[in-house]
Image (cartoon, rainbow, N blue to C red; front, side, top):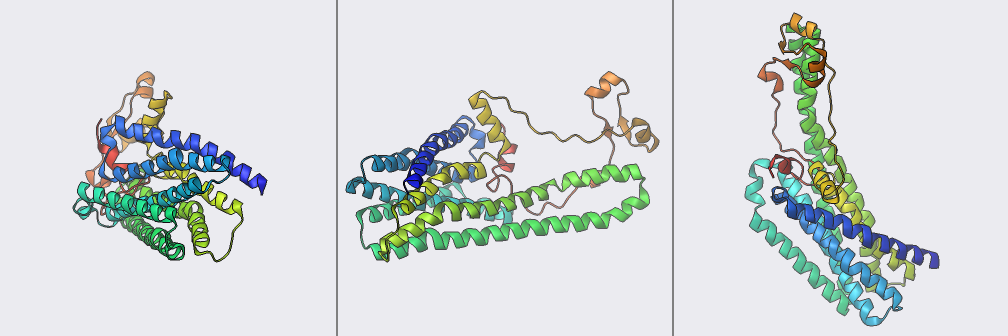
Length: 364
């Protein structure tokens, strides 16, 4: 038991240092680059602010409560803040999921449904509700009724909504990819009948490049599973522990409460990785902020032989000297229809609906 408590204290110190640095760095990136402050990223900033409250307020109070041997007043304040930030964190992830759902399922009406005023109103409601729940729990009003109400408001309803929305997002992304594969398969026979093997190879590569949008949606939808795991791992133990302690059904060992608080604080390390640091532009700006170089990943296709391109009439501009050949890329004349693809839905990338796609189109 003592070993578990000591391990929790060490982890809390690590979370305090690394969590504060990780979340503050992303917030500084958003402050330095106005182009990144898009509408979807407002919900990410809200989650980062919640994480900073956990690392800068809750974690020091937990450690102070341990050092003062659980003084009643400090213990009540610590429990009240823990209940409030747990509610704020879950509701912040719920708003991110809602934003992603609206962007992927109905992108044409996204800006009419998610506006600046509505996003600000949603964040104000969540902070007000979380503060009220924290005050009620800290003062100890009606513990049994509060336990049932808190469990439903903070975990059961939000988690059910998150699970349903991410299931819809994954289904939509999978259906988009399936339709694209079917469309490309129907187009293949005509290409084979009118083109040579080299042309088919080039168009096959371009087709794969056009399908990147849908593979990106599928990969990001898989990240949704990690979000669900984060909710279950970081916040469910605390909600369960709070419900049991408030209801007074039976007593739990002391280390259970400390472990639940440690898991609650660990969400401040996981959520920035899921919703912010997956964006390459945020990675680049964060590395610039810390003075570290950043190299973007580049995918290079093999260079076809110029004589083969000239033989099939596809060579538009090819530099034949060895020095220029290393510096320049060949240009291939292809019809525009080879580059067209059905883009019926917006891309679901990074952690948010358009954290990667929307911000990448902005200019500094």
